[in-house]
Image 1 (cartoon, helix red, strand yellow):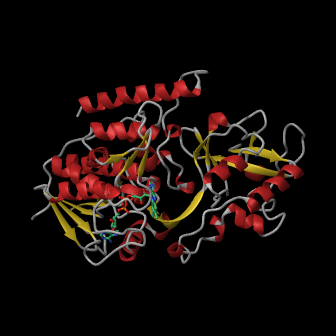
Image 2 (cartoon, protein in one colour):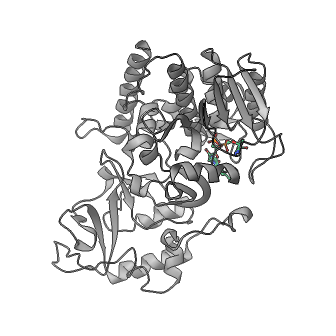
Length: 440
Ligand SMILES: Cc1cc2nc3c(=O)[nH]c(=O)nc-3n(C[C@H](O)[C@H](O)[C@H](O)COP(=O)(O)OP(=O)(O)OC[C@H]3O[C@@H](n4cnc5c(N)ncnc54)[C@H](O)[C@@H]3O)c2cc1C
């Protein structure tokens, strides 16, 4: 079959991109290495859109939850991933969980019989040099292709491990306790939020890091070294009582306006998105379990009420520095015939990966037809996620991110209660998506 778009990788993103293109009348070659002699350390089958771990698509509440809203938007745009998930759902309260085999088999079967899709079981070892291409090879991209991507993007813009520091919603930081200053008070701009700690608070916090429950590296992750700069905070804590105070929690030069003196230690947060709604706990990448992180990080002065947009982690994960490399329709700026989609763009999660696949497919279809397709508005879940990846996020500290309301432009809603704010976000998104679709 002659094809118009070559999709590399038949996971969540590649399958969704293939479906969107095929339904738009575009002939697609979908190259998937599983079933053609290749595999990853996490996949178990040859099915397309295999779920490598949990069987959950998380909350299905479109009124109060950002990922639930993303489900709804994807359904409205004819997503094959959402249709298969709905057809194979299993009871899970307000979450959308699926029978994993039924789900993947359904995606595979629908794509296999689509007249515009040719599924080829082959490993692609280099970025194709011409034709429209979508790379959707995921967090475990085969090494040969990763090397080719690294050559095209520059090695510094391709990561093999994520080192995720927690991110806090700005409006949940107590600025009566914290203050703004430059990093260790060098320079003129007061870009960092500082949370001060006494000696007792610091020692208790360090002990919490040492004692806290941690997740283990998977066997195949143990061989991938992390850089010293990405060392988990609890590993630094193990190295000595003062290691953190001389590292990420260094208080030097930081006069607390309340005491006029340096605190014993500080936790610093740096702005993480252009909107200023999300703040990154600098140097706090960790393998502490999520519940433990919430409990311990809320003992930090000023973060007692913190809501976390993302918790810390450290995993094997191939992803590119999308804010630096991609344009607003997911094209590689230096080689615009290539789009990226899915987790390799630095979104995180099954649903987010499929959502970016959906957009990549639609953008490629529009480009082929000579049509303009504006990205969805930033006030929609699709637009907020895409906007974050393609420029809203800080490129210098870019790390994978789930969809969350912190990616949306803030509401002008005064002192509205948190539960009501979520409804306002989702109502605004529904209206914006309707207007965007009406203009298609
Ligand atoms: C171990 C692990 C556990 C995870 N658990 C969860 C979870 O529980 N929940 C969650 O929401 N997210 C989870 N994720 C994150 C992520 O959402 C999933 O990995 C998701 O599958 C990403 O979708 P994708 O389409 O980008 O990549 P994938 O679904 O991984 O699809 C990429 C496809 O590309 C193929 N491929 C790779 N290289 C080549 C090549 N050179 N040529 C041809 N084909 C190639 C692969 O075989 C694969 O089928 C996990 C990730 C990992 C690594």
